[in-house]
Image 1: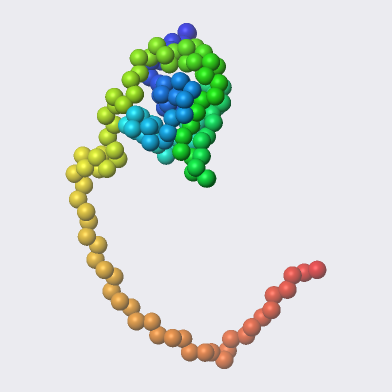
Image 2: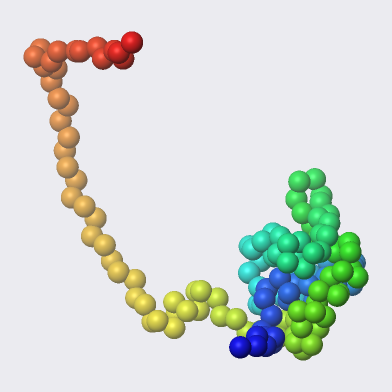
Length: 142
């Protein structure tokens, strides 16, 4: 059975479409263009996929310890992968998705909050010292 190429792109391939120029792409730009197409909290995972699956060399541009932008260094290799994987022929346009957030899904369920009664207060009395207690020391066997 022959495997056909899927027209549905993986999230890291969608990210490649805006990073393929080789210019640094800020995280704000990624969020503005692909915020509805990908999960932003998985950005580092997508970069790892670019490195392992597309043989891309990704440079992280930092401000101190915080990553502010990403850049593809070996653009020719990545473009060749995109052609081979069918990413360029998938006709993907960044920012066209209308993904619902998880909060919207909860609203669709028409869930109603449940009121929980407060537990009754319990009075705790201190325990009196008991002379019958024996303290035993436990030692490890040598």
